[in-house]
Length: 84
Image (cartoon, rainbow, N blue to C red):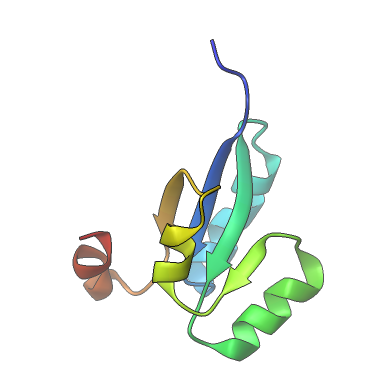
């Protein structure tokens, strides 16, 4: 069985993401490789403490060749359109 970490990207750096980040970082089979938020201050704050690549749009995360799965942590009403 493949034991390498699952490389994931996250869309949205708000409260939902902040609550899940400790679990993602502690899991041995998960590696956060990219994040995106349209709030440049949130991206800058994230960049100070983490080494994942940062983007300003969800499309950039989805286009990142290393990202295998995307966690959507934006407001709930945006999830359906973003998932499509």
